[in-house]
Amino acid sequence: MEPSLLAQLKRTWSGKRVLITGIGLQGGGAGAVRFFSEMGANVALTDLRPKRFFREIVNTYRIAQTRFGGHDRRDFLSADLIIRNPGMRANDPLLVLARRNGTPVRTEAAFIFDVLGRNRIIGITGTKGKSTTAALLHHVLRLRYRTELLGSPGTSGFTFLLSRRRPQWLVYELSNFMLEDLETSPHYALITNFLDDHRDRYNGGTRAYWKVKERIFAYQRAGDKIFLNREDAHSEHLADNIPSERLRWFGSRTVTEARAPLGSLSIGAVFALSRALGLDATAVTKRIRTFRGLEGRMQFIGAFGGVRFINDTAATNPAATAFSIAQICAHYLINPSRLIVIAGGADKRLDISTLARALAPARHRILLPGTATEKLVKILSRRQLSSTRVLSMNRAVWAAVKWACRGDIVLLSPGAASFGLFQNEFDRGRAFVRAAKRFGKAPRQR
Image (tube, rainbow, N blue to C red):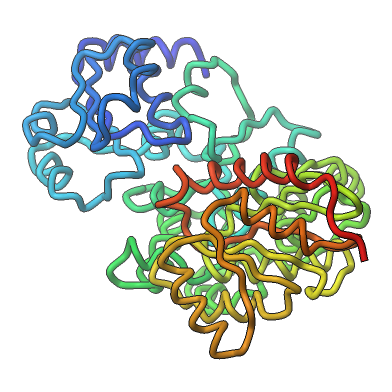
């Protein structure tokens, strides 16, 4: 970022009280603490979890006040700015109170848009495939442009602001949380798809969840572009109300010899955006072949004794698991009967029958504990489909290894949330990777 802009931000926030609501587990909250500390703000941190989770960050940065184990309304009323992190909903009564008091409430994304503007931002959202699409687009655009990737797990927009880098394009993965109270739209916006998810977060169910996704283009202006998936039914419906000069379509596209089992829609989306930004199709194809994929998203871990292990822990809803199974079978040219799938977990009030249908053709179904699993077992039993229930990831992988034979794929694709047994979905995925490397050396041969 321009040194002059950073100096201006320092003048703006030096001595001001900035309340950060939660640290989270993916780096965003820690990035906010670091940024506002370096801006000279009086940083206050409030989180529902106990203090033991935050010893490192409290000892690393200058924090004026901390409150752990609960929130206090006085903190929200005395702040000059509130940075909202994912654990706190936009309509939380304390945030409503703060807004009524005239205090601005911003997510990381909203703050970035405020500071940098919208004209050089490419925003990407969708139920499935947004992380891979964003990372793949970033990888491809670097052929021609200085590009930064924001919004993916482990990255922080606030850390980027401190970096003094000056990209030509920002590729921003925008989750529903980021879009909930965003009141501007990126110059280029793309929605991978609309699937059933997050009923546990939105009282209006799936339609309310989709409505938040639509905010990515709700504030676009003349000259902006929205890229929609021609194979998605809800996207087709949305197109009726979008001016034709702003609308662009993409569809499935494959690239042979790709290193990672990339979704064909992610490839199609990246082709459409890259071509719109002037990149040559042949160069784009070559560049896609060099992409290694992302952690937890159809991530190839290794092959042991002729058996592949794939970590798809980011499939946290039934439709995502169905999508991944189809993509993996197409990439590796196998029948679903060669899959041993580890699935199940915590319920998100979604249609579990979708997960049961996705798992039906698999050779074996190994189920982790959770409320979604309880529902899934009943549906599988009614369809006379067997399953094996386990209490831990180690036991799940050990069972998979016992049944696997050369040419099979052991796939973690839960179709459910991770809370209860793991810190988050990435903790779940890393447990799978550790177990695969530990137990995967000698699968049973047939």
